[in-house]
Length: 226
Image (cartoon, rainbow, N blue to C red):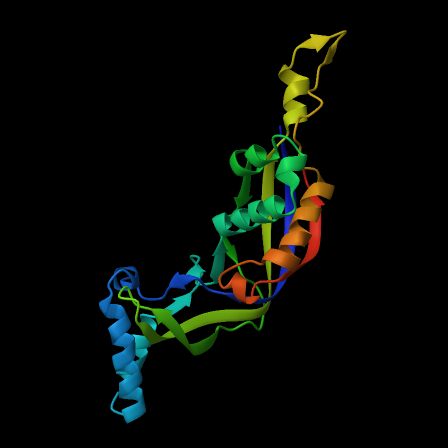
């Protein structure tokens, strides 16, 4: 009593949002991390830092991708689901279709958990830039941000959603041999899912740094298989 769809998207560019250094979360919570950036900038300017030390320090401000068992860079399914929820909300669908928000949030899943970013010639690229932030004391501070990204890659995943109509037909109160189906039962049809995915690809984006216009996607395939 589910509807299952196979989805294939092409992303012009997608950024990794997972810290490359497993201890970087602690650093982010430590105000001294901002001072480290200033020291790094000074060392680079004075040419007093080795290539190894530079890589070690930059790793702390680098975001990258999760990897599956085969070592392929991946997007997490929860990221895809969050983007689709964001798109549906921005489109105003939650106010238009009663029960849709609950259905997408609690009655729908994206699988697999790690979705490979696939392309035969894809290779990770790195962008390093100086960013300007404000310290906890309100002082402007310059720091480094480095992101690993991929260009022109595809992702394929399955979107599974609860078929409330099928459930009503099987278990609902029957009258004259037919189940009474609520007139406002939310249902994710292929047409509705396509509209949400296309909107997400144009206006929301997938992966990290979406606010900077990264992660825009084109829908290549959408097929209902169940």
